[in-house]
Image: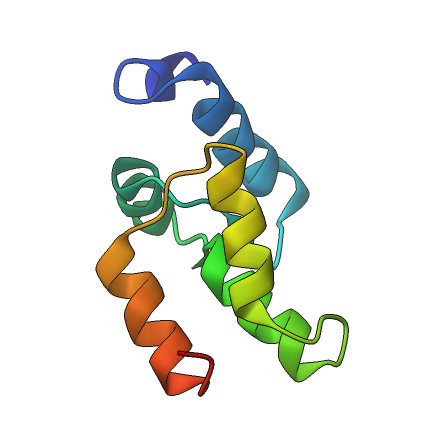
Length: 93
C-alpha cells in the first residue's frame, strides 16, 4: 500500500491492495491513474458505467440513464462523452 500511495490516494491504494490480497475477479475503479496502475498488477477492472450496464443486462435496474442521473446529482463525476456513448448504445438517449 505504501508504494501505491506515492502515485494514488489512500482509497485507491487500499482498493488495489485488497484486490491483490483477495485475488479479486474484478476491481471497481473509475479514476484513470488507478485503472492504469491496477492493470499493471494484472487486476481486471470495471468502472461504474460498466457495472450499471451489467446490472441492466441482469434485470437489476430498468435504466442506466436514471442511475447515472442520480450519481450526477450527488456530485459523482463521469466522463460526459463516455456517458453519452453508452446511453446511445443502450438506446436510452
